[in-house]
Length: 388
Picture (cartoon, rainbow, N blue to C red):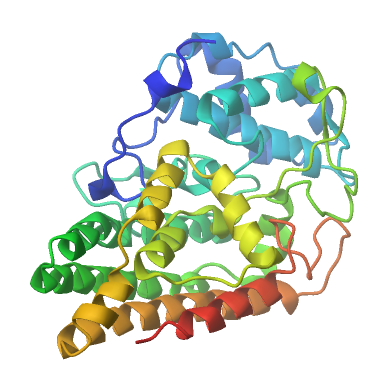
């Protein structure tokens, strides 16, 4: 199966945030042309009454011919989009994924170290291209590589997430320097890092605030959301999904969670750096479970920040009288709370207020298989408690 995962992984560079160091690959080599053609025409095929038959007719996917990390990510993007189209693209969801799709998806998941399902990494982090190569990764200069049905609402919904990831880069780049400043007992350097984090959070909130510009709540719920559900706690797939041909699963259905912004590493990394802790309950366990869906190096980075020195304790114990430091820390907390508040409000408007038309797309369970309104409200309230 090509090279082992460890030799294919790029070194994580915090100065790129959680976006890839090199822009995502646009297409796989000619050997994969049938799959590329299917992915590029997926929105057309999803209008066919023979979608599953056509997908089952695809040639074998030679995972062993992939040679580098960018090809692996491109392959996982293609395979997970096609897999979700197969499951959710007809009137009734499929209860099994055929070997032709299941086996390469599983093989890719083993290479990449995350589950064989559409995750945030494929849906957003590796699903964009620049319109002009010499301009930044930002709204107005990025377009999606892959859609389900397509259209401006789906495009904008995902691109907002890409833009948020780009806006978060200065914050992610400042986390380790902030902890190093604590270790060196250097409050001035810590203040500089906290200011960078605060400014990045402002940018993230501004980006999220643009969601309504081109993504209509009704269109999102009816035309975008149905295809990103997983098979964990989804009412229409109560037993999960069987992956045919995957010996390791012993013909047993699997229950993987669907794509969700909770799989982004930004907020977990910021929570870890700012010592924002969540009560030890099922909601916290869900957040920790979401790390399994992150790229390996991203969750490793979050773990490193989590195990690092406490910025909050340093300010409380050593520099609680340094008003600029306290204010900078509190501004980071308040902007994190603001981001979570906006997310909660959007969840209510884009999902809970919509009229449920299918058991497969419930208004009370998130795409990650959770009672999302309860979770989001709890996370918002807990964040506020950490003001100094």
